[in-house]
Image 1 (cartoon, rainbow, N blue to C red):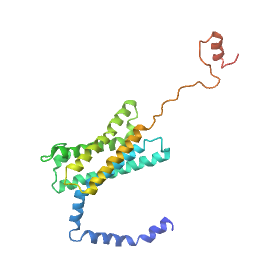
Image 2 (image 1 turned 135 degrees about the vertical axis):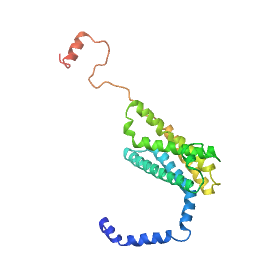
Image 3 (image 1 turned 180 degrees about the vertical axis):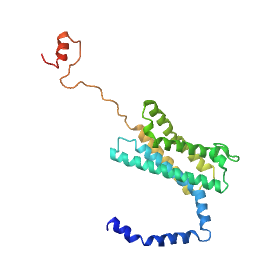
Image 4 (image 1 turned 90 degrees about the vertical axis):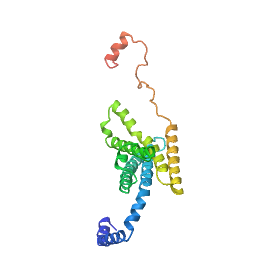
Length: 236
């Protein structure tokens, strides 16, 4: 069935779907249960998404196993998971402030929390570093000079530091993590470690040594006669 016909066929069902969603959402306790889930799950989803961004960002630089088309796909997934991670991160911060888990000051100023300054501060610092990496990635065209390219690498690689800080923050700052959460975090660590090792062990492409084109002079001191022939395009 063509896409246009499918949309036309499904259009009458849209109001019913919306009404069903509202009916479920307005059930007794549904908003509270959703908030309870986000209180615990938004941070986990943020870390998983940002881990995916780190993994796909590393994969997008591979030239040994991936072709140019594959690298374009990896870059697209890298950007998509990064945007999703920042969205979950904003939701995580908003829910924590709304439920009184931390203050707006502690969420904005690193290490300003009264109860757990180090662990909450690591999360705040990670948020800023992830945001800096996302902004520099979005405006990469502004870093075209050699000096700008170096600054871009430094700022964008801050995502690795942010990821480590977010991992410690997620495991230690809140309530005791469930077994599946700890397992998921360990899988995140293993995945990043494997991809990073493969990236570092990949052979670097050096510049090929220069070789003169066929028919060019092989070097050595030039006699006046050779210089004259060269200036005439090789004609005697």
